[in-house]
Length: 320
Ligand code: VTB
Ligand code: MG
Ligand code: MG
Image (cartoon, rainbow, N blue to C red; front, side, top):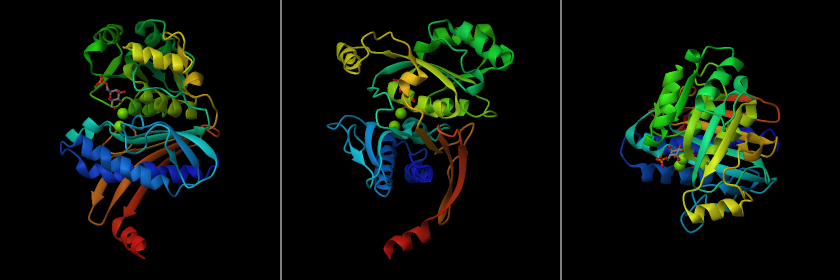
């Protein structure tokens, strides 16, 4: 993938964030999602790729746009694309922190085609890489990551979704003495935050969406972070889908290289609401300012784009 595509992908996530961020706190999660999908889809039209959506808004019969299998882009190198135009629609609807517009692009076949089911995840940044083992207890993992990062366990901050199913993990993490941030939604954002030293986020643990797991893996892959995961099919249909993907043993541990099977991946995200790494969108009369991260695995380059968008100028350009 051409490195200049990075900037094009930044524009795509910016567009999704900018359009949907207007609905902050308005209680309209579906409307916000619709705006983001629309904006992202439109932004792809001018990007010189032949992209196939492998992780998107749903199957062809349930999503009008950015459905799995949809082709996007203006033509160019063949790539696979994973998108989540809004990761955390509830967060936008309620005006809460942690909502992002996010996507990952990889060479064809590079991303696990994770169906919409649950996935158990364990993520760490580059300094904790090699110290995780999802088959071990969380207690052991926290201790091993702390040792690898040359920190005390009390200096490890982990993030998990605030869910009943995580009571056991919460108890373990509290007993071992780690710091915990419980979030109501959006587990890609903290995985992305693990990638960057200074974000204050060191681990992400627990069960969330499998599609989100692949997006998280793409981010971690870019910087040399680490992740292990296990699919959690709950119905026969979901088990069948695992088999279809070539996963015969559903308890199989998926490593970072199973989730992202290429060294050529780009990850891009724009914050809609505030995160530990990215500033929220700020709207002002006549425009807005966005904060975006773009990471590229080939070089390990991480770019932060702090961008001012002038609506009036853009509108008059389009009218010409
Ligand atoms: C998970 C998580 C996502 O939705 O999919 C969650 O990975 C849904 O989990 O980041 P529940 O079924 O427990 O509500 C998100 O939080 C947002 O898409
Ligand atoms: Mg979404
Ligand atoms: Mg999501």
